[in-house]
View 1 (cartoon, rainbow, N blue to C red):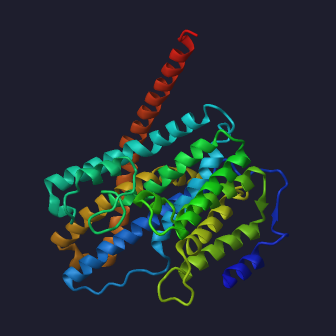
View 2: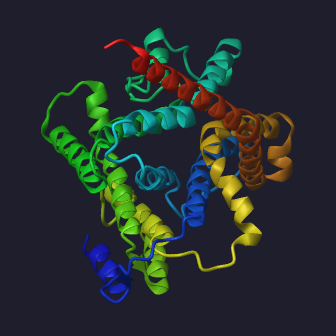
View 3: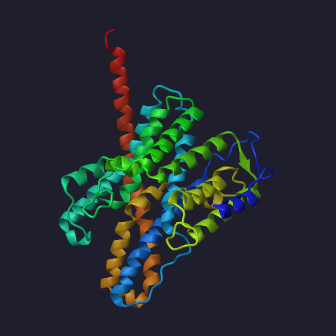
Amino acid sequence: MTVFSQAAAATVDERTIACPGKKASPKLILVQSLRVFAALAVVFYHAQYDAESLAVRFGIAYQPSALLPWPAGVDVFFVISGFIMVHTSRKLFATVDGPRVFLSRRIARVVPIYWAIVTVYLVIGQLAPAALNRDAPDLSAILTTYLFIPFPQPNGVVHPVYALGWTLNYEMFFYSIFAGALLLQRERAVLAVAAVLLSLVAFGRVSQALPVPLAFWSEPIVLEFVFGMALALLAEKGCLLSPMGRFGLFAIALLLLHLDLAKPGGALLLPQVLAYGIPAAFLVAAAVLGPVSLAWSSVEYTVAALGDASYALYLVHPFAIRALRELFAYGGLATGMGIGAFVISAVLAAVVLALVVYRFVEKPMTQVVRGWLRVRAETKLARMRDAPE
């Protein structure tokens, strides 16, 4: 922590941050860029994992990249999530209808495509069990997966049937708490959510035995949502970093991630929320605490499109990676083109698949569910108004 504190203090001081009242760029193009980075980091990590299995299978030497701790892309996503929830809910704070509107939006955005992917995964498991490398899940595991409830698998690991959904179990829990806090003014709402999460983490640290869901939700990683919410308040108040301050935070974040202070056996072993969560917060701060002064018009469409598809990329990339792995294995490409070519091909295939799924599956499903929830809410409101006193 001494190294972190000194490095941060040397870059971000009174001369590099100010709150003149000017808000950051509403485009949030840099946040979209971070979404792309976070999703690609996770994809690259899983592609390398399958690359190792290919290398062993064919006796080919392969050394995975350790430039960054690639799973830390999830931590970046969590900080972004905390920021975006506050940023996009400005008109919902201190309103009676705020919780319903917020949850309707999040359900429409998160649930349909996730349920669809889980269903496809289960169908594949029934048709080709060997493709999943695991036993068929029981009914409890399936139901808790659809309901975003943490549930232990036979191997003792707490994750859904579709393992990537473990992050959504945290997200949906955060959304539930955030929705209730929307009845309060913005600053009080953020403080309330932060207090709940901090209390829960503290309770989890001192408690010996907790129910599995509560133990899961009390992990310190939930504090990364708090980091994002705090950054949203700073941005809304117009607290902007100077260009050098933003560049400094960006450089420090990448350096800290490269050092991987959560890696066992290192000189300094920190918990994930500090080793990855703090650099993730630095990256988001560098993205949102200042205007976008560059001419982004030439690349903005591409970045925005990839950012919009980042959720689909996170969910569907294992299908692309597994398909490419089998193609390289049985098509002779592993020995002909090499393991590095597999990693590049798998990442590109995942991106293409995600763009297709977002455009033709996720986006239409989200619009349909959003419209359905809006109609249901309006119908219910009309009935309440027409009801006799």
